[in-house]
Length: 271
Image (cartoon, rainbow, N blue to C red; front, side, top):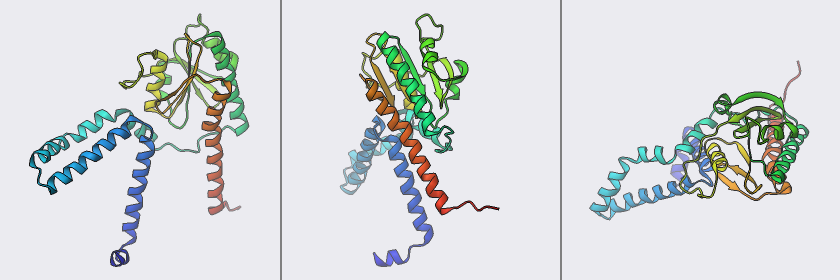
């Protein structure tokens, strides 16, 4: 062991660090999704392949080897949402927010007030909050607005007589950039049959992007939040506020803290 450590080059350390980072990044993407369970199953198959060879179990080895010949196609089919989300995240920067914490807090309050009002009136709604991954493809099929976000604007868009009330609205920062947008429906077989089109659309967009979606049920007036394909239902105003603050305000605080730490290591020199 000591000889191996002494013979290690700096390139070997860098190689190990890169692979470890890639594996950790992959785990973060798959965490909490059904793909992680499938990945565990594939790991067991890999172990079965190794053990069958060492134990000379020829039939088992043949079956497992035949399966691994098609494993690339299987991974592409099973992991479609996760692959799309991972590719979409490449090149995205975590420091692209321009709003201050106070402005973002006020924006979230406008959304919460509108959602609670719609829930009390049983007005169906689906509100998509863009994060790091841009939703240009979704915006292009809707009606472009680019308006200052307000409770009154959200309520007017989801009024039953509004021509845009059946689609989703897309919010970026403090701007409502589009309405009447159609979202991709989830194809997951694990989704309850009791969920309607709004909830299925919310699940679909969060499986492909890092967006946060708020859904108000027209039938029950219940409020739901969907993140990374995970649905949380029956939220009240306080619970909704906690969820949104934890996601958006904490991200901003952590991002600013990282920037400040980077400034300590790379101070800006005055000319």
